[in-house]
Each structure stands twice: as structure tokens, then as C-alpha cells.
Amino acid sequence: MEGREFTFTVDTPGVRIDAFLSNEIADLSRSFIQKLIEDESILVNDKATKSNYKIRLNDKIYVCIPEPKEVEIVPENIPLDIVYEDDDIIIINKPKGMVVHPAAGHLSGTLVNALMYHCKDNLSGINGELRPGIVHRIDRDTTGLIVACKNDIAHKFIAEQLAVHSITRKYQAIVYGNIKEDTGTIDAPIYRHPQDRKRMAVVKNGKEAVTHYKVIERFGDYTHIECQLETGRTHQIRVHMSYIKHPLLGDEVYGNPNKKFKLEGQCLHAKTLGFIHPNTKEYIEFDSELPEYFNKLILRLRNGN
Image (cartoon, rainbow, N blue to C red):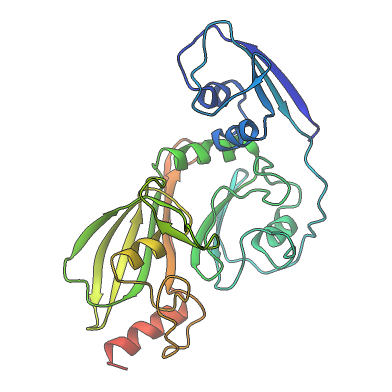
């Protein structure tokens, strides 16, 4: 994909510039347009702007989409647990310990390396050279379902569903403590921790974050729950459950580094994923089995061990 340039003269004023450009340039997601705005690759009347700027009549908008940087990400023949695949999307049941996309100093062994081998050149490029096909992510030690896209049209379509919180994402977790109420909602904004930039935290002026939860089974000092995401902030379930004093079992970042159960990271599984298919425009939903370690842990807790 080479660098591209666009120019627009506004004749329908009053909407946000990111929404306007997302509609005008079909293969760009709104989040990618917002990144271009932050990088000052989008100008209004030859000046930098902000994503929430409402365009005015006869505004001159210039868009420069830079050519992707060359980064050597090597396709790797890593086995994938493929739940579903067609010409537009692929659904993977991600194992524990697998990183979703490469980062500086960590360019191999990721889901992206595996997808590049399996899908060849059929992955969307909207999120840049390090994240081909990746629309959303789950943490390294979280297991379960993730969707990747094979073209930019599918990517944009699913990314827009994420933006308006219409995708079904249900997780199962085991947390510390006995949650007394059967259901609950945590509505608490999340942003970078003010003292530790590697962590997230509930912060007064953070981004909206809403998690709905319900109890599946109680084990006295522990509770098996289902969490449904309304929003999708980084580490959202982990941060929210810690915030209400029920951190995830095995979560050493937001919880208690309890070694009793010898877990590798948080006990969290992305079990259900549903969305409107980008081609058929019909709702599809996928479900995955709990991983072996999770089921063994449930049996152990039921037995009081």
C-alpha cells in the first residue's frame, strides 16, 4: 500500500471531522483517522485539528495517509485453533501465553506471526504493519476468542461495531471473595495509572468503561462469574473487578500474587463473541469451551482444595 492523499471541500457541515472522513474514505476506520489527526496528517484549512472538530461549510480538508513503514515480521508456522474462517474474517481460540501482536523487541511467536503464515497476504492493513488483521486484542494470559480481518472493508465494518459497543463479548473469570449479589454493573472510567504507566486504573476523568457481571457459581472464598463488556478498555475486566475488591485469581498486576494454585496469569477466558458479519450483514455468534486449566480449577474449588 503506497502513501495516499485526499482533499475535500465541505458542503455538509456540522458533523465531527473523524465521522465525516470515515464515511468519505471507505477503507479507513474512525480510530485510524483519529490517529492521523493526532499525527497532524490531516489538516483543515492548512492547520492541524482535533478529532472532535465539527466541520464548517467550505472547509478545505487535506488527508495524507503515509506509506506503511517496512518492518520485518516473519510469518511463522504456529498451530492455530481456528473456530471459523471465510474470505473476510477468521476467528481464533487463543491459548494462554500467546501475545496478540508484535511490539518492539518482541517480533516473533505472536498471533500475528501465525496469521501471516496461515492467511498469506490476506490480512487487513488498517492498523499498520505491526497489527495486520487485528481489530481488537486480548491479553497474553487471557484465553479465548478473537476475530481478525482479511481485508480493510471487513476491518472497518467490525471496528465500527466495536466503537458503538454493539459487539457481544462475554468472558468467564474466577475472582477472589464471595460476590453476594447475583448480578451487577461496574460503571467506572479507566485510564493510565497516574503513577505507573504500565497499569490502568479507575480514574475520575478517564474513558467511559462499563462491565456487567453475573455469578455462575460460588466457592466460599472465590466466585466464578461471567462478565459482559459494554466498552472495551485495556485490562477492563481486570481493573473493574479489582476496583470492587474482587480481583481475578492469578492476576499479579491488579490482584494478589497468590501462588497456591500455580496459575500463569489471570484466570480469564473470552468465551463468547458475536457481531454482524461484514459481508452477509447477518448476526453471527461463536462460543468456546473453557480451557483445561480453568475446568481443573473449578473442580478443585468445588472440592474445597
